[in-house]
Image (tube, rainbow, N blue to C red; front, side, top):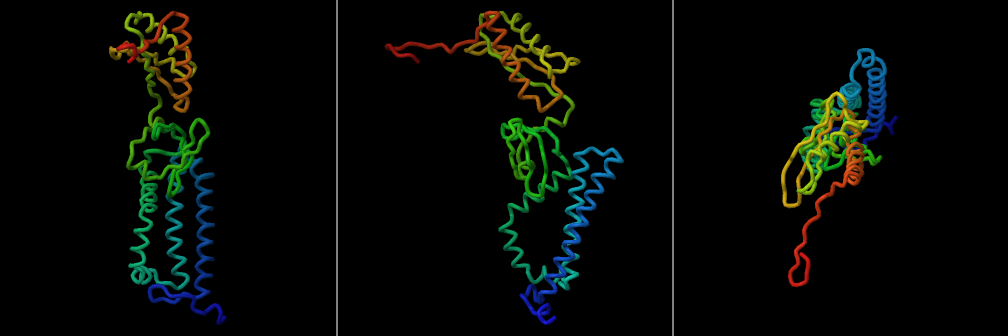
Amino acid sequence: MEILEHPLFHIGGQTITLISVIVFVVVFLVVIVFSRLIRRILLKRIFPRNEVNDGVARSVTRIINYLILVIGFLIALNSAGINVSLLFAGGAAIMVGIGFGLQNIANNFISGLIILFERPIKEGDFIEIGGKMGTVVSISARSTKVKTNAGIMIIVPNSFFIEKEVINRSYVDKTQIEIPVTISHNEDFEKVKEILLKLGNENQYSLNEFPPSVTFSEITELGIVTKLWVWIKDQDMHSVLRSQINYRILQEFKAAGIKFPVPGREVFNGREH
């Protein structure tokens, strides 16, 4: 028993013994097991029974899990005979120093809580960040995992979603995809329009109830910029649809003899510019 009562170190004027450490570990392990049990009950029974959206269920469960762990940590300290208020008061200077060192981690943790509460994104959403598109796989305390269509997993700090611009394509049921095409000045715009509308209608991922449209965007020195607008519901097929239609544009334009503009070259003193 003397070994268990032997002082190991001091924090905030309090003596920490081996028995204190053992009690803390045991109590906190019980809290972890309890939090996992609650999480399983919520995800497997309560939320499915009440038909709660999967993304909402995971977000709420994670928040509850964090609260249980924080409260459990304080209970474990108290059970070990450690006065939490004295500990914080005595270790204030240490906590300030640690706070500065962990400022980035704290920022990401708080950002993670904001994401879970406000839900600008949720698990399963198809988003666009930094020019890359992917599906949100999981939102943890520090970071969010996004899986691209190429199977690459991107780990993004949570603060990025609060501070930067993020396009969430799952916020709406459907969206329009813009596919720009530049044609020569002397090409028949009506013919081009007919081909583009046909390609928009025939694509398997475009919504038939919302027909595609073609706009005469602008006239440049290079040529005429037209845009095909296609409605799509399966947001993760965004890149696939664009690729398929662009490929078909090449095929149809070649068959119809429609040419893309080529930058003009001027010759000065025998040199091209």
